[in-house]
Length: 151
Picture 1 (cartoon, rainbow, N blue to C red):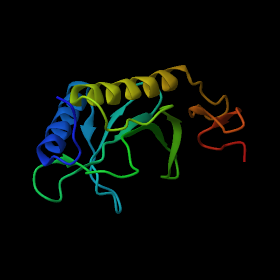
Picture 2 (picture 1 turned 45 degrees about the vertical axis):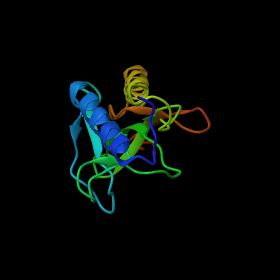
Picture 3 (picture 1 turned 180 degrees about the horizontal axis):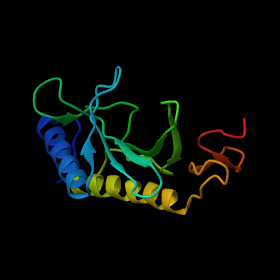
Picture 4 (picture 1 turned 180 degrees about the vertical axis):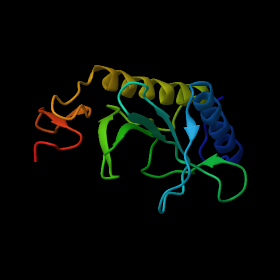
């Protein structure tokens, strides 16, 4: 079925399809933080202490879950590391966002593929030799400790 953002039923079907795929892939719904209104799902990486997170654009404030109608937002995938002082630091992100266009099943498939891409980046990242925190690649291309222990 081709997705039509103006059709409320399509938005609900897409939301349920994404939730179902995330559940099958082992992602759990997070409790909302701050002003976040969209549903956020995550799955911890077993070896690195990093959570792979997806921001779904799914909202429940008007009744049944549905993706937002339209806007500049897209489904985004990233990996977050919780530092020892309680902050969260992004350590990886998908190269591309998932835009809600095309077939509903294809949108859900692209979401899972972006999460797999992030998972692969986390698998390949190393650990800091000083504190064993995960490393991430800076904008300049350098490997940086997620704890910033070098400061």
